[in-house]
Image (cartoon, rainbow, N blue to C red; front, top):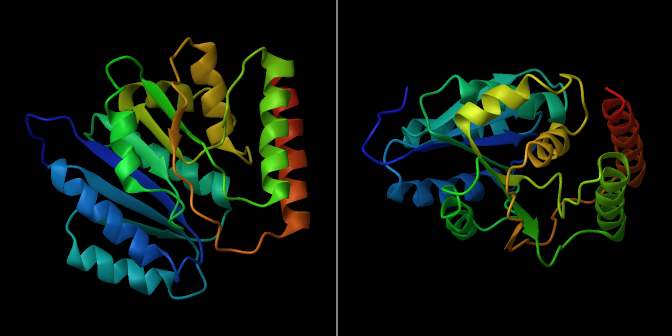
Length: 235
């Protein structure tokens, strides 16, 4: 349980699956950033990794009291993020921040979002210069277009894992999305925009994706998400 201070605190939610090459560097970078936020916490949800990720995470948790780990069976990225969010809303922190464990983002950009928390309960970054494959960029652009068609909302980077959310607000909107969706971050962005939250769309740095994309897996995930968004728009 975090130690509350006179300053606001946040809990950083990181889903991780087979990130043995990158997870230590990512956690060390964010742990350093936490120095300016006494009482804040990093929560890593290990989604049944089959490489050395669990061992690395355990060592980091032993080294840093602010780093906490949950190990679970493999259930996929969506369910892992949702579990992380659920644990976050059960905490005492004022804010919830979510990013991924593969080191694509610069922790120094966190303050860009943090400074905007007075004006919104839900703040998004957007990858100004996106270092991704053409397939990923095309799917992201189509998702933004599809969201505009279905909901009349323009969201620059609806699924970005670089977002700051007020804990009490997150607790409410989590109840409004299906628990089996493939890309829950996208649904949360839609709900926040529909609620009139000022998303800000703050430009952040994005490093080259180090993993090779599985094109078939990307396509299947994209089609599933578009179908789920269509169903969501009908209710």
